[in-house]
Image (cartoon, rainbow, N blue to C red; front, side):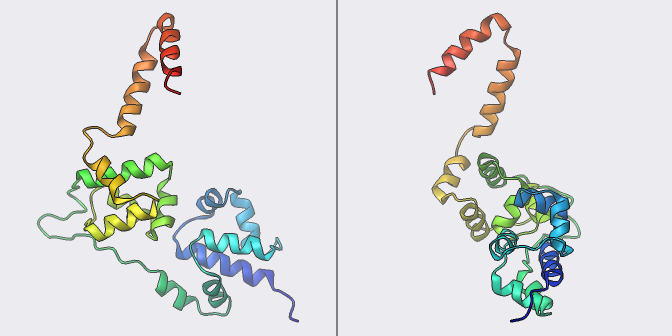
Length: 203
């Protein structure tokens, strides 16, 4: 039986990370470890058990077979499969990248992400898009056909009924929460206890 080469496995992990377009700090956030630990993984200075290797691979959004392909020198095949094409509107007179179109749909998708507590990095992994693409979507710079909306909503773990509920709401939940926090911060200390008691009733 051949001895495992941790250095090559580390290089393969690094390639998968780079295919996703994230740095070590961002990878550390996703894996709940430090960027220095990521560096040790990728430089082969830490011998990882199979379950930990799989955790890294799956967190990056790849399969074990794709990892094996990169390990065997077939990086181009994996990278080409990963490439996600999202059409960015480019019109010479009204380029979408310069003219942001913040629709209610765009705001509703951002609301769903915020309610889950997902960062744009986390959202990019769930959707299979790059982090900049998620940013462009939330800035109104990318087309949002129904199929793409459905994909994002499903990736966040919601249904289209959830999406439509927020889409048709007069005010988003996070807006209400923010306004409530501002009101609480402005209340005189002598009255804050009464507000606290009132809020306790809603637990």
